[in-house]
Amino acid sequence: MSKNRALNIPDRSESYWLDSVEFPTFPSLEENCETDVVIIGGGISGIMTAYLLAIEGYRVTLVEARRLLSGTTGFTTAKLTSQHGLIYDYLLQNEGSKTANSYYEANEAAISYVKNIITEKGIDCDFSEEKAYVFAEDEKQQEKVKEEAEAYRKIGIDGGFIDNIPLDVHNLGAVVMNHQAQFNPVKFLKPLVEEIVAKGGRVFENTRVDDIESNKRPVAVTREGRRVEGDYLVVCSHYPFYDKEGFYYARLSPNRSYSIAAETDKEYPGGMYVNAGQPAHSLRSIQLEGKELVLAGGYGHYVGHKQNTEESYNQLYQFVNQTFGVKKVPYRWSAQDPATLDQIPYIGRYSTEMENVFVATGYRKWGMSSGILAGQLLTNLISGRGSKYEETFSPLRPIKEPGMKKLTKESFHLGKMFAEDKAEKPAGQFTDLQIDEGKVINYNEQRAGAYRDEQGDFHVVDTTCTHMGCQTHWNNAERTWDCPCHGSRFSYNGDVVEGPATKPLKKMRE
Ligand SMILES: Cc1cc2nc3c(=O)[nH]c(=O)nc-3n(C[C@H](O)[C@H](O)[C@H](O)COP(=O)(O)OP(=O)(O)OC[C@H]3O[C@@H](n4cnc5c(N)ncnc54)[C@H](O)[C@@H]3O)c2cc1C
Image (tube, rainbow, N blue to C red; front, side, top):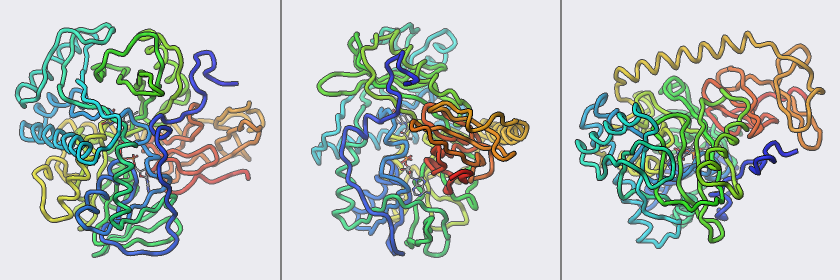
């Protein structure tokens, strides 16, 4: 029986964005090849980088582990804004005005680029200009929001503090940023992918890269051992999977959250909203069959730290129902995004030791503008023009005090995860499982993960993450095994759903 029948939420996750567009499909890589730039990962970062390089005349090869946009870009909420929560006061306090200004300017430039290209090419991607708000729900949050408004004044951001928001929720005012936007990223990126191909770029799907050889000409090596060699290589795989350099596994923390699209009794007032506190409530609207729906997101948690993830959808539903009155929920989905130690994305050289290898990651759930900015910045670096934003986003930048504290916290967290998993005692047999139930069980005296599907068939896997050996935990809404250490996720039969892992979980029972 549907777990969410009582609340009328769909039982399975499906992205509104991916359902709204028919996207072209591409073959998998069957032989070694050579190119100018190898780009790993077909989300907004990889596609923008491939597109911008292709229109400059580079031969690009885009290699995607599953389908293009099957990562976080296909499961986003797609607010296209430089208002990334309450970031600017933090940046002024901790990184200085040069970095804060550069961060804002680079994101605004990315948004302007989208506006221009949509007009120039006539791209129909449900783009609309909107105001973006971060609203306060108590006095402490109000203070923070006012400090953010003061940061806007210092940086020269178009916006500031307002006493009330157009949305009918309890609030003590908000910081508003004017001239921001929302769009459908899948509709936006489709013509760009077509242009990559038209310019001679090659795209491969269902081709997971497993290793990188950092020679004078770097090589991406796939799970099947095929090699793609280029002058440059760009890792846009969301969470970087290559651990011998860069140490991204110690510098990123992935957080997962939930979205529902709801037809509601009350009309949506326009604008894009997020509260300043926790749990997060993020709101915008979307169009479905001529109706305006509320797209709500939130209830995030560190990946792999919550097993009853159905509860998160239910909580989100309750919030939307209280605020707007829910008639119907045609879509639900969830996704994750990593945050860096100092809140600023890592876009630039992968490591000091890898001359022509670049990376773009760590968008902290603000990857629509950041993904476009990544494409622009990486294209400038590869072409040798350089960029005035290079230093701000460089993955090689020194990390200051708050970031160092976060690094210590992350290391402690990893140690704790290993210790807790060693202490956990699996209980029961796989044959005890109900239909559509998954849990950690005892299988031949070993810890194992078991799931019983709708047909009654059992799937038993070794729950040890193939990335670094942490124990994965069950995620009951998505029916996946999720790693609490670095956020890798696996289907119930062990296939990799999200990296950094590149190898499937071991099957214990065929
Ligand atoms: C719930 C949620 C809501 C969000 N809402 C917003 C929002 O409103 N506004 C905003 O600005 N941002 C938002 N974001 C953030 C934004 O969606 C992401 O930052 C952005 O989509 C990341 O894009 P990407 O290209 O870096 O990664 P992805 O879209 O994840 O693409 C990476 C691709 O790489 C592939 N890949 C992975 N490993 C390999 C490998 N080894 N070999 C080959 N391919 C590989 C994956 O399959 C995937 O397709 C949100 C994020 C979440 C989680």
